[in-house]
Length: 241
Image 1 (cartoon, rainbow, N blue to C red):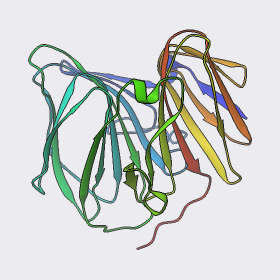
Image 2 (cartoon, helix red, strand yellow; image 1 turned 30 degrees about the horizontal axis):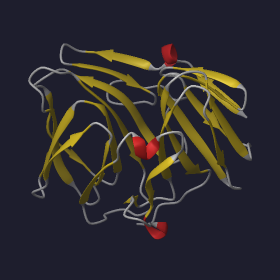
Image 3 (cartoon, helix red, strand yellow; image 1 turned 30 degrees about the vertical axis):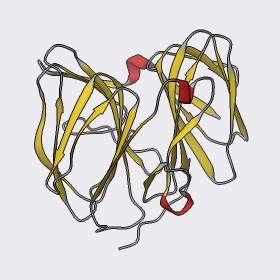
């Protein structure tokens, strides 16, 4: 089953410095039918104006994955980590037992576009940590590039999270076709960052999302230049205390 969530079905929150689309309940937005998708608790599609951002604020017991689509994000946290995350880079923060961090648009002129996704960890009160890695457009060209993996199956320097979930990104040229197999007990969440595709023959366009369950294989074909992200998730999960 493939359930398409159209772009205009995401909750939009507009402020003078931030334009964001919430895929699930977040902050002041609450919808009991949009709380999470498996361990995927938050999926926010943000545009941050120049020289603005999120001041220091706390997080706990959450794996926070940030993917910069365009621009530069400046990260700083209470554990002494500081970095600039640019287009195509991935950041993973394990909030664990507790961490403060701030996120700012590093540019004085250009808006910052990013996706921020929160995944419920498999264990509470983990040691907080921060990781970052850059991937080029060529790395993800016409294929699904795995950029985040579960800690227990990490390889090739891929960023890791404390949950049985994997993140893939792709940049597809017109007419390209890629596939992703879903193993038993798995489901996926996919988002079209920009472009137009067909997923198992079902059309999707810019900012559309898809919940996928009960499919053995996903066949993704681009109708035009497309960038997307796919998250492979467990149907069931538990949390150790």
